[in-house]
Image (tube, rainbow, N blue to C red; front, side, top):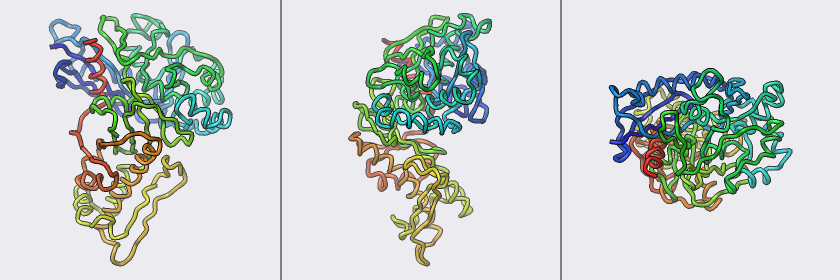
Amino acid sequence: MALVMGVDSSTQSCKVVIVDAARGTVVRTGRASHPDGTSVAPEAWWQALQSAIADAGGLGDDDSGPAAVEAWAIGGQQHGMVALDADGRVIRDALLWNDTRSAQAAADLIAEFGPDELARRTGLVPVASFTITKLRWLRDHEPDNAGRVAAVALPHDWLTWRLRGFGPVGESPRGPVLDELVTDRSDASGTGYWNPATGGYDRDLLVAALGHDAVLPRVLGPAEWVTDAAGRRVGGGAGDNAGAALGLGAGPGDVVVSIGTSGTVFAVSEERTVDPTGTVAGFADCTGRFLPLVATLNAARVLDAIGRVLGVDHAELSRLALAAEPGAGGLALVPYFEGERTPNLPDATASLTGMTLASTTRENLARAAVEGMLSGLAAGLEALRGLGVPLERALLVGGGAQSDAVRAIAPLVVGLPVEVPQPGEYVALGAARQAAGILSS
């Protein structure tokens, strides 16, 4: 039995799955927590990765232990800035995707290059999430640190490098070989300085952000691999959404609707998308296709908020919603509790309209919450349709997808057949699937 390892190094935690490469069945699992915050020392991820691997029974290096892993890949959170000096040391805590201090840097880059030009060159119009804005922030606010940057990696790039045996001087068996940094198409496409049309870095944009050129990870193709110190094959990994798409087996025509604290709507497409409005991020995936994506700020938290108002748990909120008629008697919730990213309304607030003596019931309020949340996500689907992305089936995932009401109401709102896969660690499973693919190549 050939075993492969897939890793999901997310914002909150590190999850590891050891999988039978031929059958795709999970043999062992492990998990470790990450610290909270939007600025995190990458060393915490490295310690968590080692703990999660140990929790899963290890890689099988010891003949007396579990069967050995023969290939592995790491998926994880996108966009985070890991800045390395010439000795391979991390210069400062990594700024994560959810660190918004670089919002002005994003505006400055758009003013300098124009949204149309940036979308054409990178598939993205910068927002504070993307790595390019964090590098500009570093240049503007910590010029001494910016001047020391010899290489820029993303979280999963850096972890792959470390687990392959590379790292700071005196702390790793293979040393600080910066040219051994590798990544994949999906994560590279979230930086803001990689061109999904050409498959190459836009060095002019990198220099405009950081102030000078630097080593960037080599972008591995879907079937390419490198090795670790033990000779195992190592894949390029994946950004979290691309890893989830791969783990779910999503293909062209599928759109994944992820209902977590925030929401994401992303489709597998054969064609690249370019959206100068910035609504749709024109990401690549890790298979050679593309993964146009829309992000919303308000998803499962909408149900949390209305559940608190009604004094009910999620199960009772679902029961109430299903007891109401479609349309909630005219009661409508605009769910922008935390502003909104799609549409771009950062200062918006939520509102409830259509309140009459007849419509204002507990059942209708619960129904309006579910319909309002789903309508916000459906706006993402409409943005994808507007760019010509074919949508034939929606795959509903995330904590919010476990609601009976959400599953029942979703087809009515999104206008597509809806399937709800069993809950699973799909990012880690996608990384494992990639590892199985390179093992057989």
